[in-house]
Image 1 (cartoon, rainbow, N blue to C red):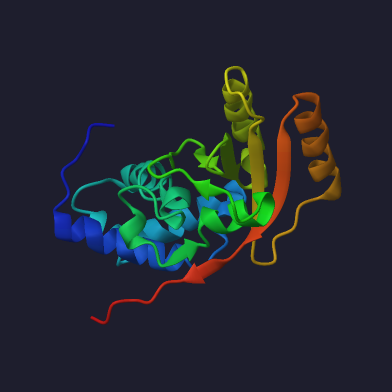
Image 2 (image 1 turned 90 degrees about the vertical axis):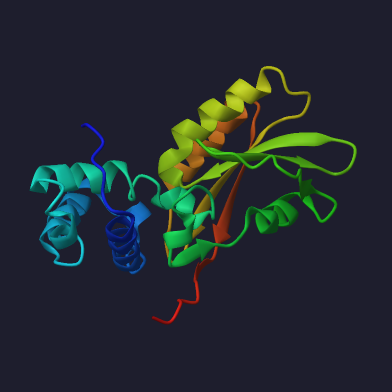
Length: 203
């Protein structure tokens, strides 16, 4: 789809309202069918679709929402990327689970946090390790990233699968992840992260 220029104030207003609504959902845990229903709802929402109607058709709005703000939502929760400023919630920082899993001597190397998937390099001052993290449904991406790193890295990569709020993972799925990680000589850990509501600016 050709890029359509949307006035900055309209674009920001739409993203803020969209993220406000998404913030009340477990968006990363919602099924594709449920997401489709929300796309329709947002296209019909006066504060979202109504604002975009001068620039997109209904189908164009769905594509813009899906491939723009909603594609970036997971990274925004990590305070990463250009959409982070619009998020109403934030995941507890990666520093916390690094210390929880590896001990307080380990720190994230400054400037090493990157995306696709989220990952970083941690160090205890002498050794360095690659760490990548994501939700259970992203395990395939995490595995591929860790295996690619393992080919040349001197230390064993660590895959961190996280859950938020009351989310649970099936024991069968978790066991499968553990078996795959062991087969590939990778370390794997499950952690729970807080999803915290950010203070909102008064209008």
